[in-house]
Length: 266
Image (tube, rainbow, N blue to C red; front, side):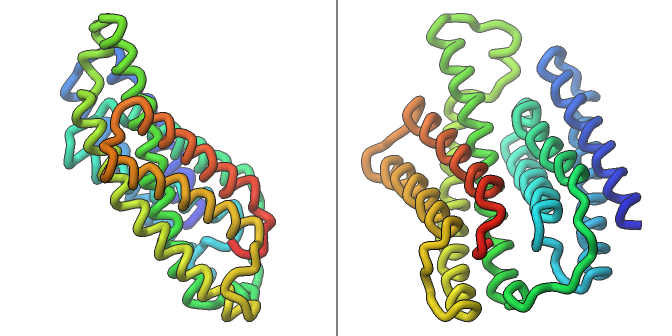
């Protein structure tokens, strides 16, 4: 059953990605509706697959790279659906949903056998930490996608190339607002995730902070987004500078998530 839902999800995300990309080439209310429906159905199938696996394994599937990539994809899609419905920004799906699809496809290439959950991962603090971390990472992923679109729109305005693509993409003001919302959601979530991760570390290894590679790079991520949030609130950072820093932050997130996968503290 889990495998069926998973394959169904990949197919739906693939169709949704194609639909969102076509929306950039032609304006069609019907196609826009179908893109959203395909994505929502895929999200529901993905969620059911995750729940079924959790019931089967008797723990939330966040304990290895295969499970983590799948859950990361789920969080990104869920976050995007929220912002798409709130701001009516279908065209952003062309830049964000392909990322979720690639993560899900990547997870399907990994083969992790069922195993007993190690004692270090049986802590409730681990689950709390992991869920918050993924929620924050999803916010930062969406913010990075918005930043890319912002830079594209800014280039169009600067060069006065106000063609069909320019008309389909959201306004700079809308993207700036979404980016700020992602930051104000993601940064507190990351902060609490790091704190709960420290509590988990103390329970598992007797120290709140052991300067594990994952902990260190998580702190670097926190500092990047702290600078970005501080700059936006106190100095009024907007536009190109904020967009570039948001993209840099996302690159560091990916490096930490994938590059530090063998770290003790997840």
